[in-house]
Image 1: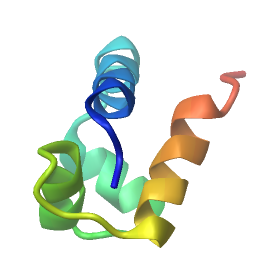
Image 2 (image 1 turned 180 degrees about the vertical axis):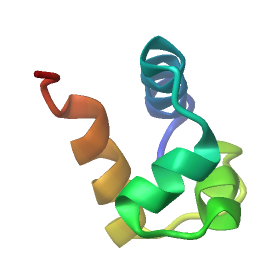
Image 3 (image 1 turned 180 degrees about the horizontal axis):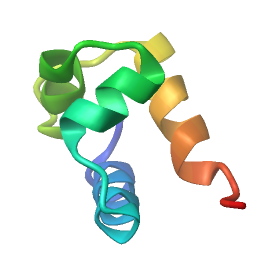
Image 4 (image 1 turned 60 degrees about the vertical axis):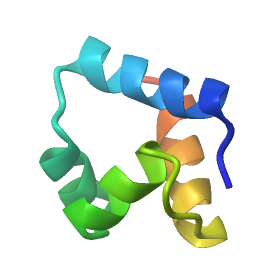
Length: 61
């Protein structure tokens, strides 16, 4: 499960890139509810958490 610091970093990048949970979910091919649950600290899934961390760490063009 992602810790609070990791979830905040993902949320910060979402704000910086002006991307919604819905758009992020589409980009990662995961349901909006699942992304919301993970970012809220309610759900945990290693595969989706890895996708989120890879997205957070991805360099922008």
